[in-house]
Image (cartoon, rainbow, N blue to C red; front, side):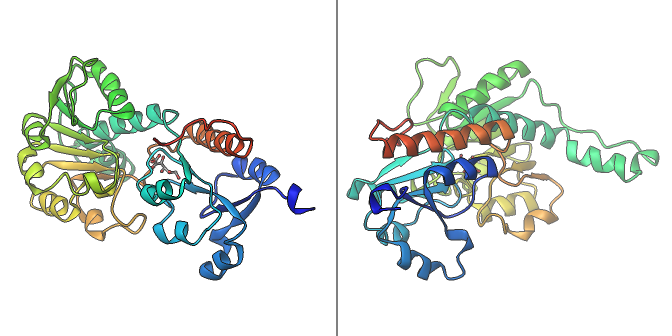
Length: 317
Ligand code: 8YV
C-alpha cells in the first residue's frame, strides 16, 4: 500500500466495544496504545504518522500526549465530557475536538433517578436483605420517601434538564443551579449552590468537570445540605471535595450519597466501601448497549467527516 492510500493513523488510548473496533479497523490504521508494553516508545515510534486520537471520556488526551504528536488534526472523544482533553492546547494548534453529546442524555438521567431511588429507598440494601435470609428474622428497616421532596439539580444543560423532566413525574419540587437562569424553564433558579443545597432535600450534580467546577460541592455546600440531605453525583468526581464528602458521610452531617463518579477511578478511596449510607456505582451513566452503540457511531461519523473534508457532526465549541 502506498502512502497515499494508507488509511489515516488513529491513536486509541483504550479500546472501544468490538462492534466499534471492527468498522474502525476497516477504515483506519488503529494504533492500540493500551496494548503497548512501552507506552512512551510507542508514541515516539508513531508520533509523525498519527492524525487523530479516538479516546474515551475518562482517558482524555493530555497536554503531553498532544504536544508529542506534531501532525495531530483531530481528537474524537467517546463521551460527552471533554475535561480530560487539553482543549486549550488543541485550540492553540487548530486541532479539532469532537464528543458524543445528546445520545447519552436519557441514560445518564435515568441513572440519576435510579440512584436517587436506590439511595433513599435503600434498594441495594433490600436486595442484600432478601438474599442473606435476614428477612426471615426481622423486617427491613424503614426508608425515606422519594416523591414530594425538593430536588436541586446542579448543572442544567442537556442532561440536567432531562433529569428534571424525568423527576417531574415524581410530584417533586424542582430547582436548578446554573450561572444564568433559563428563560425556557419554570423551575426555581439558584445562582448560589450553597443556597440551593440549603433549600433542597436531594442535590443532584450534573455539572461539567474541569477546573471551573473543581471541588464546587465543598464543605460549605455539604453543611447546607445538612443531616437530612442527600447527594447524588453523576457528573465527575472532581466536582466534589471528596475529603469533605467522606467526612460528612462518616460523621452523618449529610444523610447519604449515591455516587457514579469518584476521584481516581477505578481505584477509589476505600473509605467509601466502609460506609452504610452510600450507593456506589462504577461510572456507568451512559453504560447501556443502545447508548454505547450510538456513541461509537457518532465517533465514527466525526472521524469520517473529518477525513472526508466534511463539517464535523458534533464539534466541541
Ligand atoms: C463514559 C462519560 O463513561 O460521556 C461522558 O462524559 O463520562 C461517559 O459516558 C465514557 O466516556 C465512556 O468510556
